[in-house]
Image (cartoon, rainbow, N blue to C red):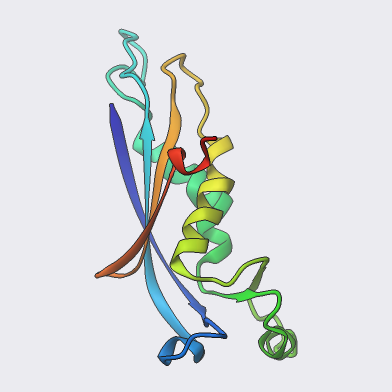
Length: 151
């Protein structure tokens, strides 16, 4: 069984080597979909009975470990020194420096890598993160799947 929780956040970025508008500083209303897979918990009388995982727990983990960090921040590639230096000059600016260019693909991969160890098999239902889908716009998104990491 799979379940998906959607969260939204706002962030700025730029793609420094892009040949179009994305090379400029700009922002997006991102949407993050977290898909978990596992067995439905059969535990009569328990709060998780009939669930793979409580949606509020899915949200709380993603908020604490990813969304709160990225929301209303500027996501910048470490190698984009003109922008990292500029942002460092702004007092109290919320900047997240990344080791890769903040494309939708890289952000989806980073999100998957951060979140995967946090969704654990707490209830012996084989729970695991199956996919992260990151929408950069309503029409453009990137998927990072568990199978992308298989050997």
